[in-house]
Each structure stands twice: as structure tokens, then as C-alpha cells.
Image 1 (cartoon, rainbow over the protein chains, first blue to last red):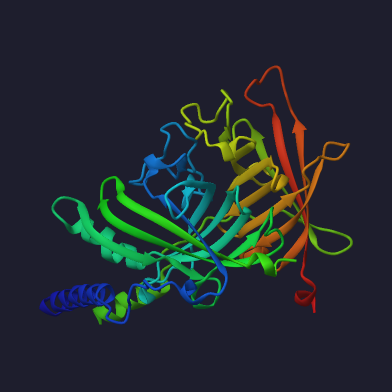
Image 2: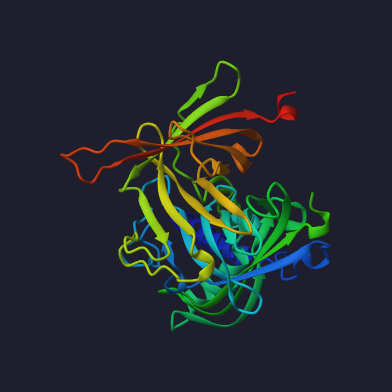
Length: 229
Length: 181
């Protein structure tokens, strides 16, 4: 009997050690330098609030800690869309002025590999900017650093919350260096392609209601006007 | 042993397993394939935002009154396959501006398969269809190219005031030339 107990205790200890190793993996870091920093393309910055209550519409399966907004919006409860979120929001320019409208769909990805510190989300943006036209942005995002640095500490804290100053780039592809792909739809950039990077700047998070003070930023790199056909 | 078991479990067990519906694809005689996506109205409309309109969806929607949204309509829908099963979500943007002209665009997002970005003709044909093309795709649609037809099928029924019809998006897609080689 004592051998069985020893085996069980050993396995539980090993499993706990593995989880700790996974969480405190010294080889995993938070990317905070944008690969577009060295781009020679024209950069356009769009920022938006990550609070559901600041959005025009936010919906999910209705069971997440982030509640849909407005309250009676249709929810994505069907099995095929249960792990999908839809966000409609005003996009602000670098001066904080409204500069466009964005629709973002994001779904949990089957490429998620906890052992590689990858919590992957497949996401696409449909954007209208009166200055630049319309765009489609597709990307994969890795939310492991966000979960590791913000969500887990918030859940472990006595007050179910996290406060601090955190910045991280979520885009991880499909392009080289983790760059998202941009396709122009209408306007000057129709039929052209560009690059994008999305990031999050967080100051407060609640384990009960989700983001409290958090901003998303989408930087789009477009061909220079003189290079357009 | 515990470490090995936990590692094996994390490695083998899928953290995310998206629910899949069979793709209802018809092979076209000239190559490529065709698929039909349906949106029931008004039931599948998640959001309809138009500046100045009093008939917004959802009812509590506070649509922003910015000048640049004056001639725009933005809608969100659930998307169904031919069997009427919800398989994704979609956004439709339409509008006109002096700078960019008129446009109608769709983004269809199918979590288990990928996404499609479609640009449509601003004016529908005489038959009421609107034609467009696949501008970009992800995952399953990444290497495809082709056309899309958007049409409204009137199904208004006096006995069912909650059903006015459906939007159909019919895709005719084929692999890009270098993918066929």
C-alpha cells in the first residue's frame, strides 16, 4: 500500500513541478519590440479600448467573464462559434481622434500548445478608414504572455485583480518575424498588400470582469503613396 | 514519472478542439468547387449599424455619430451552411464616399476552417445578384481564388413574421495556378 501512496505522491509532485516549470519557463519571453520598427513602409496606428463596455458591440458565448455588450446582443453560443469573439469598435488615430471603424473576429486556435508557451488565437480585422479605405488584416496571436503576466496573477491575487504597466505584442504571424498580413479592399490601397502588428498596453485587469484599463493598438504598414500603381 | 506523464498529457491532449460541421461543397464541372452560405433574416443579424437610423440591431445599440460613418452601413451576422447549421460569423460593410467611391465587402469567419475577404460589385445585376471576388483568405481558403455571388432570397411568410428571407453567399473557388501544378 505504501508503494502505491508513494507512487501517487510522486506523480502529483511531478505534475506540480511540471506545471511550475511550464509557468516559469526561462526560455519564454514577452515580445515588446515591433518588427515594423525597421519597416520602410508608411505606418498607420489605430488604437482601441479593450473594454467590452467601450465597444459598439462585443459578443461571445455569454459564459465568459467578459460580458457581451450591449446586454441583449445575439450571443455566439452554437458549438461551432462557442470559442469565437466578435468586436465592433471605433479606431482612434495616434492623436486619439476617431479615425475608423473596425470589426474583429477572433477564435481560439487548435495550434495552441501549452508546452511551447503558445496560447494561439486566429483573428481577422475588417477595417474602414475614411482616409485610407478598407482593409482585411489576418493574423495569429499568442496570448501566453498576457495570461502569464496579467490573467494568472489577477486570479491568484486576493483581490481578484491585477494592476501594473504591461506592454506586449500579440501578433505572431503568418508573416516572418510575427507580422500580420494586410489586404487592401477599397480606396488608394485596393489590391495592395501590407503588414501589421497588434499589441496590448494594460494597466488594470479584473479576474471577474476582464480588462479594466487596457488598450489595443494595431499598426498597419502600407506601401508609400508614390509606390502605388 | 509525474513530470513525464504531465508533459505527455499536455503534448497529446488538444487544449482547443473546434467543433466541425462537414463542409457541404459541390465540385464544379469546370474545376474548382462551390459552396453556399446562408444568413437568415432577421434572426441571424447580430448587429446593424447605420447613422441616423432608428431601426438599429440590437435595440440597445448606440451607433456612433461620426461624420465619416454618415454613408456607411455595417452589419454582423451568424453564418450557416446549406443545412442551416451555424458555422461562423460574418461582417458586411457597405458605403460610399467621394474619396473611395461605393463599396460592398464581406469578411466571413469560420473558426474551424479559416476566413474569407470578399469585395463585391457596388451595384447589383439586373437579376438582383451582386457579384464579387475572393480577395484574400486564411487557412483552408489561403490558396483559393474565385468569385462570389450575393443574393437575397425572399421567404416572407404571413404565418411567420420573424422570417423575411435569407442572404445567400455562393462561392465558386479554385486553387491558385501554382497550387494546381
